[in-house]
Image 1 (tube, rainbow over the protein chains, first blue to last red):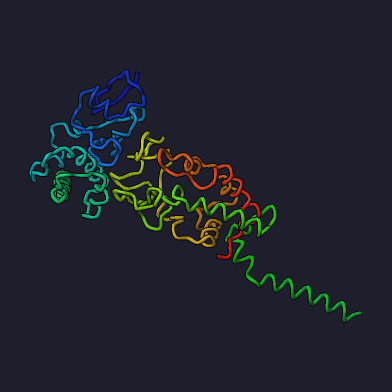
Image 2: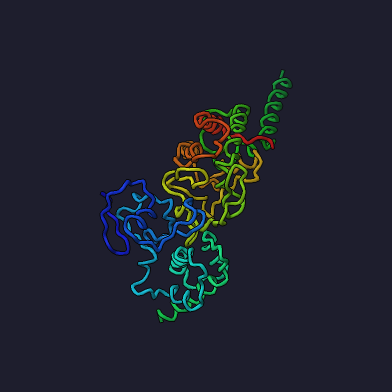
Length: 155
Length: 203
């Protein structure tokens, strides 16, 4: 039995410890906001936070998450009001939307560690998140906007 | 008789001064580690052992994480790592692109999946320990230089060859070519190189 803390809620799962965390999230717990993209840590669609780091859940064994804090897109904010989520909506970033949960989860780590990122900082943080619709320019703008919102909110 | 003795004394002095000033020791018996005690100095054996070591260190399994730039290399052809992760201050990546976000404590099964190790990282930004592009001589001098080798003494260098991340070079997951000689052979060559003086090849 594995004990997992996901979005501040404790789950006890009877699951093979080698199962990828993504499978546990989607198929066992039913949190389907995190997406399966490539399955080999190449695309970023499956990014969740593990103790605050933007890990790729498709290659992270569920045993690595035991005893740690997992946050998925569903738990990023209480009311879908994280500055990134608000900025994403304001700028209509998504096109098909499939990669966007992973994009936002990666961007959230960037904004936590760098309150006012430059375009270069954004590139360095987001290069591992691929968007087949090519929404990269809007993603850049939304991250800048979210950084502004975050700074205004903290004043 | 006196003249003969004087000649011998002068010859000995000239020989010793000549050897010391030839630059052999300072140029080949490298760096600050040269002051440490070595078992014996044997330049031929030392250089021969280093040549084996060099082949391993320049293989993709070692060199890929000792790049000349700040982006690691990838694959048997040592291309730039896809998605361009950058070194960061501590060598473990930056913000949302840290090495351990993809590289797990163990290898991920399957082809083209990230190899794993709990210590996965590049050398830190203030001690890059570059292998890529180094000649045998340059690399030997760098490794034996305390100021450029991660501040390792001779004993620590010998220990380093037993490090789990070094050993991982021979177990990098499916589809990746291992270094050119077995790990056990590498360790023997590494130890021999250092214990016989850590001599740098001429080129």
